[in-house]
Length: 57
Image (cartoon, rainbow, N blue to C red; front, side, top):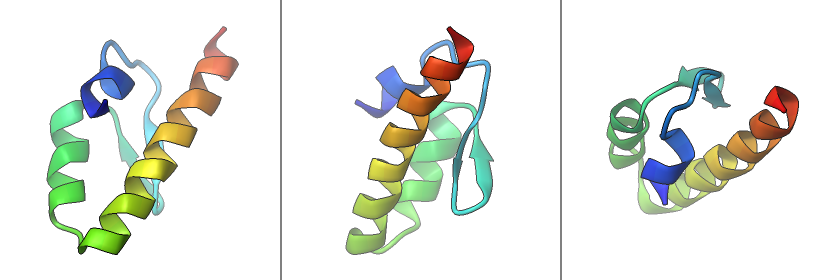
């Protein structure tokens, strides 16, 4: 799912005030977090990507 969020992205997804433009950046960040924080950050990325796609269209 994370790869789909970042595939071909030209507008970064912001989570915790940090911009993420690639899957690798996002993945490294998520893996550095504790389980509960990781789940919250992933959901934030997912919703941020959805909102970003509405803006781009």
